[in-house]
Length: 118
Image (tube, rainbow, N blue to C red; front, side):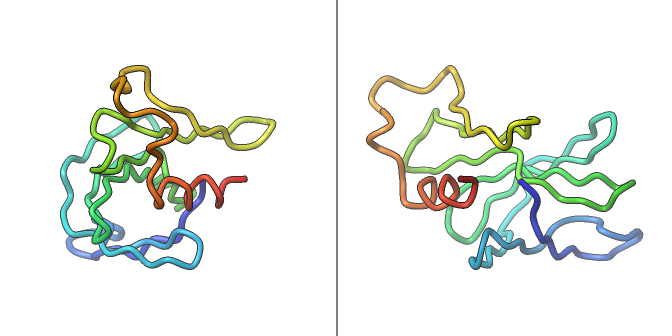
């Protein structure tokens, strides 16, 4: 899922995300929990001001930002990952989802993200 992201510009452009938009919602990055490099992208696991954790991917060559995954504190152990396919976007739940957190416990933010993808 493509995102609009505003970044801090330090020693280089797009050094780290400071806020991003999901639909009409603006989310401010409270902390960057992790950062790593893939073959083509840089990834940031961030905690936003809504209390949720997001993994944002940035392709520096194309300057595109994507939402790679999402986790709500109300659903510990449950990650929603987002993958693009030829048929569109698929929202999947990680295999280690705990038994007490069923699909019925989907949070408002998860429902909003699912609504954006459909």
